[in-house]
Amino acid sequence: MRNNPKVDVIIPSYKPKESFIKLIEMLEKQTYPVNKIIVMNTEEKYYAELMFNHSLDKVYDNLHVTHISKREFNHGKTRRDGVLRSDADIFVMMTDDAVPRSEEMIEKLIHPLVTDKAAVSYARQVARKNADEIEKFTRNFNYPRKSVLKSSFDIKEMGIKTYFCSNVCAAYNREIYDRLGGFEEYIIFNEDMVFAAHAIKEGYKIAYTASAEVVHSHNYRGIALFKRNFDLGVSQADYPEIFRNVSSSSEGRKLVSRTIEHLKKRKKSMLIPKLIVDSAFKYAGYRLGLMYKFIPKAIVKKLSSLPEYWVGKDVYENNKKIDFHAGYGIHDYERTDGRKIHKASDRNDTYNDLGRKSTLKDEIKVRPKDKMVDRSHDVFTNREVAWKSDNEPDVFVNAPEKKEEDKKE
Image (cartoon, rainbow, N blue to C red):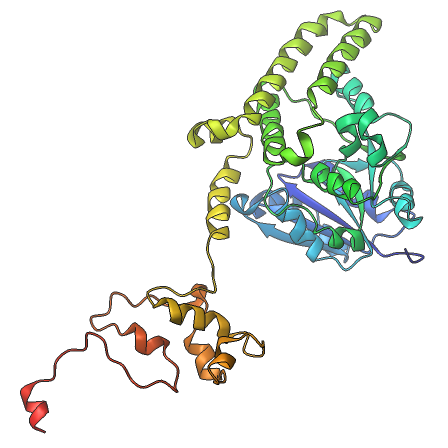
């Protein structure tokens, strides 16, 4: 990678809190300058509420905010759209509740990318001061103090941890990102791990950069843990080629046993029952998520933390089945002919085979399906005329018979 690469930060946000203000302020103070801060905000009213007493857009001219609706949000597509708004060599994905711990965070985070050691570099997450003991230990378990450079050679030893990556704070080499096709377009969870898995399988490395730290933690309980882990199970069920041979259950059991040991050492055994209950919710959600394809959709929406995702997924799956370049209500030979019109320069083009040339009028008349107007409600619909070329003779189908007076004339 070239020296002094341009760096953008992309932040999907939803109901941002005061931590979002701290995040922006810390990004503006970084020793390595941030070119643009691109915010993909879900539901403008919540963003406006936070900004009522703040004026970030007036203070920082490199802050760019795009508002979308909750139904439009998707962990993959929303981030993809954010990347499309960036022209930087490196982009950093963050969440609206993660705050850099120091002004050198960006500089340290992108170092493995600048030195061409990795395609992705993700930061260490440190729990907030008000987090409970279980959450603090969980963060330290998943994000230790020692940095790691992971490759395909580590799969046998590290298992699913080889693919572990977090978009809470992660930097991406844009060139490699584009080469691999970017984040999945429609995914409920784990878009970061799925991309990391693809990168590793293509021979790239993933860097865990412990020296780059962000403050980030949650105090989820019961149902919230269940729903999050249900979505986790769904994401793994949707990508069996990645997760089939690297189960995450063993890592979960290891975390629980290590946490119990930690609580005993810290003389906080009274938290063990809470840990067991929370772990039961997590495991139940995860197992059900793996089997979501066998559960009625109405129930799946209630089990998930993102019910809007399932509404959008139906639309997404149906759109994939549509050939927007195909016509409707016409003959097969006309449909084939219509699709070839837009490739008139191709040697195998239907028009060339017939010794004809495509004209602008032809291209207007043979429109892609998404631009067509259905006139089937018209009394005298003549679809063949609407789709014929200027070089073809007029053909009238089901045309009304002329009156006797007209015939005499």
